[in-house]
Length: 311
Image (cartoon, rainbow, N blue to C red):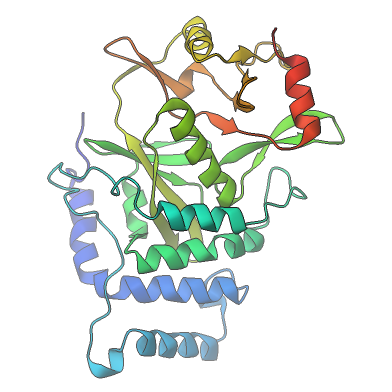
């Protein structure tokens, strides 16, 4: 597997990072302030606002007393010598679970959540990331090796880093009351976290929220999971894998060939189970890595799942 940071461009980014590191924390703070003030980025704010935010930053970090502020979390420790294994397992779980349960995920928006609403929903995560040293250097995503519909992916020897699209948190499934069927829509940050929690619980996965990346006021959520080697399974292998976990196939009348599954005992539903979203390892195991996992509470959604599931 090609190692990140080996190209001339990557080395230049690392060198630039060493020069810029002291300013990264202030940049993240300015981005935070601009989001709360409803500006698209710090540069769009009046000059007096920018000066006030910088003054707050200096006070907050005791710049006036000569203390250098702690730099933003940028390149994880061990990232270059292949010892990095992701954020410590279980770290910050209590905060993240508490944060998620306090969030209100409005269903009034479909495929696109207005950016200002998304940023307000994510701002507490930004504050957590800053305090926990988990604000990623925005230039890290310049090293991504693949760009998907929901996330951009950076491979490291042990973990796969995934950056959600800017001011987005991937996708989820909600029940469309008007059309009386489930539909794929933009997820709120709290729904992104719920998807991680469900994936870990259902499939014994090891997905972790690593932190937050900010560039010009645009927020990306950063997660990771173990690096896998293999090839996509067949549709039949996907179906067999899901049945082994006591899932039953959903027969969506709109998309009869779609690979969607429901677990009658737990109420968990799995969507977008295309072979490209799973991998068959070199040892022959089928492993999911990018499925949309939900546990609906809407009675209409639950009734639809029960009605369209195979007996």
